[in-house]
Image (tube, rainbow, N blue to C red):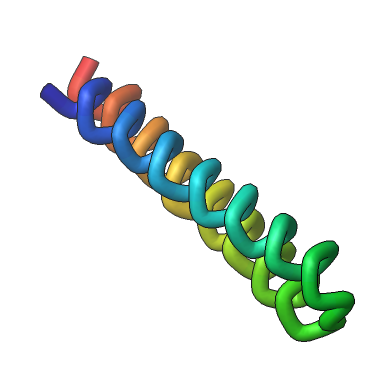
Length: 58
């Protein structure tokens, strides 16, 4: 169950980063690039916490 949630979270963050980067290149806006990078960092943080939780239960 936890690995399914982790996979879904990874997918959501990946889609969001791709959408933000696409907007950044389409509109030439630095704020979209910044938002994409911050979202990617947040996604890595969430993934790391979920991985620790999975390891703790095993």
